[in-house]
View 1: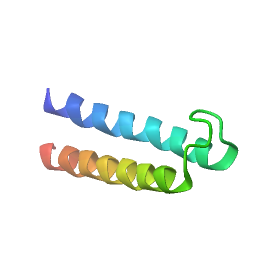
View 2: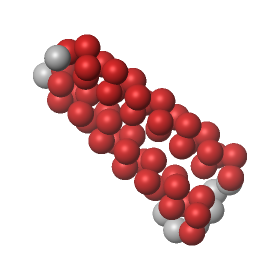
View 3: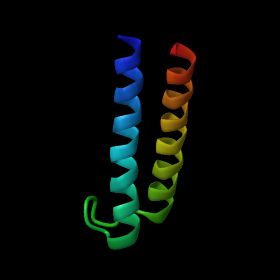
View 4: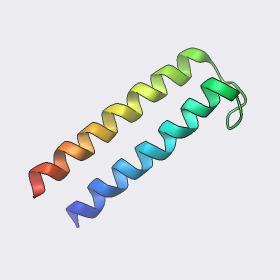
Length: 60
């Protein structure tokens, strides 16, 4: 069960990371919200992705 939670966290963070980068570059998914919001979202997604990957390594 824990491995699926790690994979789910990494997958969700990766998907949102792509959306925030697309919004920053071409302003499609969120209509160009704000540059600050997009950058904070990218940082948060990177952090959650890293934490999921680190927890996954600990479970192996």
